[in-house]
Amino acid sequence: AIEELNQLFRHTQKTYGTALRALETGDRALAEKACRLEDEFDCIYMDARDAHFRRMEEGICAPEADFSFIEILRNLERICDHSENLAISVLRN
Image (tube, rainbow, N blue to C red):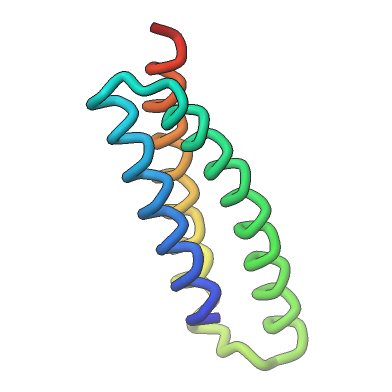
């Protein structure tokens, strides 16, 4: 679970950084890359969420960790969504 969160966090940083550079420079190619990274994030996110639910069902994960894990996933997803919005604003100009 920790490795999944680390992977998602690194991907979020990459997506945000790419979107921010696209916004700062007006670089459409970077904006398109940020959008692709967000799509990739969605796949990784779903895999991590599904793995978490399996761990919960199997009793591997402590119930106390459920809320924190899901909230972290949701917040990283929101950051990536906002990053994509920044990239889209570049593509619309």
